[in-house]
Length: 559
Image (cartoon, rainbow, N blue to C red):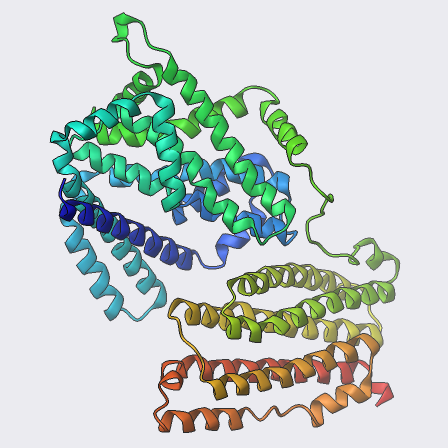
């Protein structure tokens, strides 16, 4: 095998992994924020959680990505550790779907055509969802091109005595498992490992008996991504990642046992698992193609594991109980929820119910304030941790928003006096504005912050200082608004409307345009982001001023 073949193999693997990244990013964009809401609403019981984990992982093609997402939701208190267990199991099965896609070797011949179609569609289409779909197709094309390059690069190994001797050792399951484990921990993708074994099988350099143990090790090795992704999160989030390792290890143990025993000579004397893989492939797919057999073997591991875990009464509960002995919860965390909204209050005392609604709105306001405090640093430090924290907090804001709006709607169905009606209406308006502020930060500002990271962009030194200054003005106003709302401070609300309503965003826009005219490259590169950040800061301030106006309405008699 020449150095050229080595370069081609590495390049093919890189293109394959890049295709996975492009697919993941754009399929996730197509699904939008629904992924997070699906995860929250469809995990109420184990069957629904399992299907949710399966479906989301088929979309993003990474059990690790699903596990990292659920770990973030657990960390935010939006999902319990026990709800995440079923999602993790579903994700393990969903991650094997990619192997079945790349097991269609004939498609690799059309990889260049698929790439061309996806690329030209992405630069000609206007609708964002259509562009994401085109880029997903482009990602598929890269997958198949990478597969084709790896197959071509590996072809010379067919005649290598040294390689054949190594592969003979891999037939001993434990060596194959360790090889797959280490390799997958390095590249952090079990899908890529399974694709590599299929590429090797395509040119006849590896057998099914050699591929299956490697893919078993890959199933455990891929957990490293979820573990790394949980390091900055809470202990409960870490436990959600750790149990992923435990389930995958248990699955490997079941299959390892089946690999250690052989069928009777009347059935060919093959290892039990290999015989089972061939039988399932022939029965379900009507083929004996080794590439399809490898993909089937990759899928059978979680299938066997889950049949045993769900099939034997209370076994799954026992495994979870054992895990909790090994990694006990530090503090029993409750999922994030409302604190003060109790429906029985509505029937008892509308006035008290409205006061509780206000308390909940103040919690929401504090969350929005905490989000905005981190925005400038997220841009300045290019900090993905802060970006994720802002996104997680917005999920809490959204959860409270839905609960508060529903609570106020139920109050409005009662016979209300003038004062109660005014409070109910104004609280509704205030809550809507708070939710809008949260959405601007999560869905607009943080999208631009990620863009800055992805493209390695930097604001000019002066431009960065000006954005920090504008951010400080808006943050001061948010702090005033929260204080005025909490204390019914009419004078402070008046000041927000009269003295502090104008943050003079035009000054910052003109200053930036002057730098553009001066030809400052960093300002030119970040121009669209810079001006959008100014506009979004100004819009957030407008919402704050509107809330101040509503505070004045609430206290109109005192004006």
